[in-house]
Length: 116
Image (cartoon, rainbow, N blue to C red):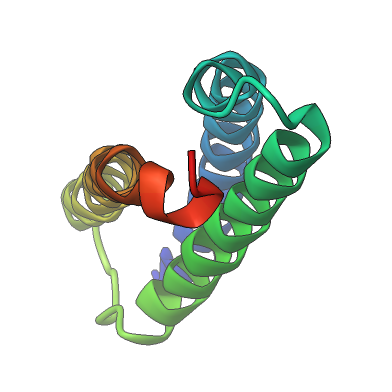
């Protein structure tokens, strides 16, 4: 039996929930973080935060779709669990990396961007 379709459905639902939940958390908390970095221009802070959220969704959805295209044929439940675990872990790893990468660069270059 080919378990690929079942695995794709489980993976898609899980990834959509993870991406949306983490995106919403980072967006809400990012408002506070960015407004502390740029206290004089709240509109600019909101635009930066929205831009980060858009990039976040595009990169993660793109990776999720790309990763489905690279999967091997899944023929057992064990292969299904291994494949789901690996691909979901990769998405979570990418989310953590992008979060810290964004924080590092925003913090490092915020003075140059705002000229304060």
